[in-house]
Length: 173
Image (cartoon, rainbow, N blue to C red; front, side):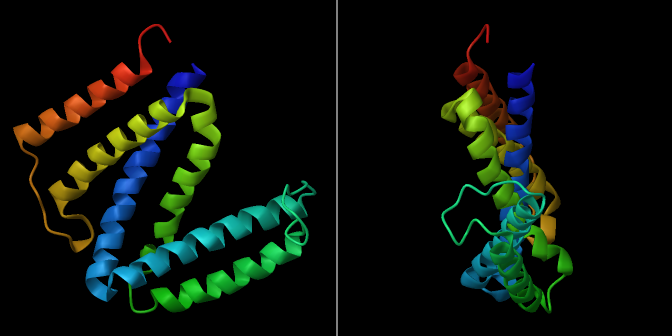
């Protein structure tokens, strides 16, 4: 049961990556690719700093060398990155501020799921999720990107990739 749940989470992480890609494409079109990258990295840094600060404040030991084992460091990092994120997203729809959360989900998913289900299965499931999400994002022209209709050939590609996940997983697992 855990493997099936892990596989589903990996697929959802992949769908999130497709949403992130669509959002970053839109920001890149509006501001430029380096600026889109900066926005995404700031969102990721803010979120991970908040997570580590919260864990430290709850009394959990942070397995990082000093001085990074203190929550105050991450509180400061979260504030600074959050301010920079706020300034960077000005003039854009505010939902673009979450782009880095999708990347954070991938990183946490890789660190948590890959050791349990294997790197190949984790990556094949996330890539399948990316393709499913990307086909959906293309179909609707998400975030102002050019619409690309779903065709039978595209659907066949999705089915083949999903079949690849089944083959990588193997039978009887």
